[in-house]
Image (cartoon, rainbow, N blue to C red; front, side):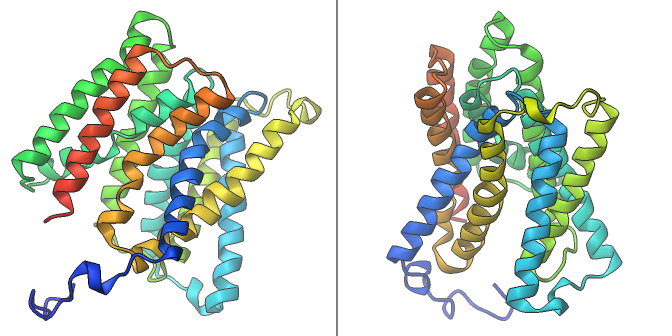
Length: 311
């Protein structure tokens, strides 16, 4: 909203952005595709090295997205200042190398559904970051954060009790913090004017970072291409095409075409989809900490999102 606009001159969200069939289709894509990425990651790391596979995924997706930008908007759309490229690199390293990369590493030990529920804490960490930088969220939002932390405490109990590797649980929690920091930084830094261009640069930076970390960890030693299962290759291709390109394009279109309050619902639908797919396809156990803690976190995110979108 421009500063020259007034509340009276701005059309209501419901009339400015109609909820059409195309909106519901795009929203369903974001719900299912982003919710299914946790399952696909779990399948990839069954036979592939975590950081090298994640790095390859985002480099491939970034190059494809750059090609789509050139095809749709022309080569001029790739232009960005040195500062904008630097900002995209920082955000990409936080989001993709830190946020996504640590999730991929953690899913070598942690069930995909549990990882998704722990990542659902991102809106809570964003509120913490806002508060730490001087913002004053409403009490209802802070109450949602406290409720969410209680849910996280329940979700981490399998790691503390030894049922799940505690190191994996802690990695996912760190990933959620880094993803939140990247999202928060993206709102403060100067990024390329074309959002697709900025996202492509972020993917390339994060993907390159993943390759470097994978090499430093020695994931390249003893690589056996024949040992990678067909399922892992298919899951990796799925992540590149559907998880990174199709879902992101649908999400970017929704931000321009649908009510933000409706788009924001992905934050608490994705983990539910992930848990359901993990249980149905990978036979991941639905233990009481996952069911109870997950339900508390989802409710907390609902409270935070519903409160914030009224502001």
